[in-house]
Amino acid sequence: MKKKLYRIEEGKMLCGVCGGIAEYFDIDPTLVRLGFVLLSCAAGSALFVYIVTAIIIPVKSDIIDAG
Image (cartoon, rainbow, N blue to C red; front, side, top):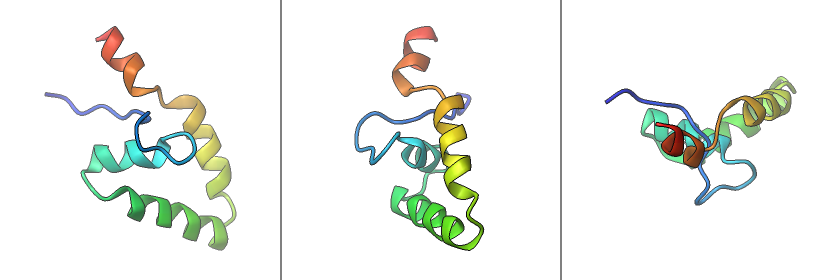
């Protein structure tokens, strides 16, 4: 089965982007969230990337309904 990137709806903090990325790579969502915070503090562009990915990446229920 082909892996698909999506935003999660259950267990999300803000938009579910980090949780979806964590499920895609099969890692703990806390690590992804921590990475976004560290990148945001270091480079400042992580917040912009998060907002863009929240707009671009579909929600899990939309993928399941369509496929």
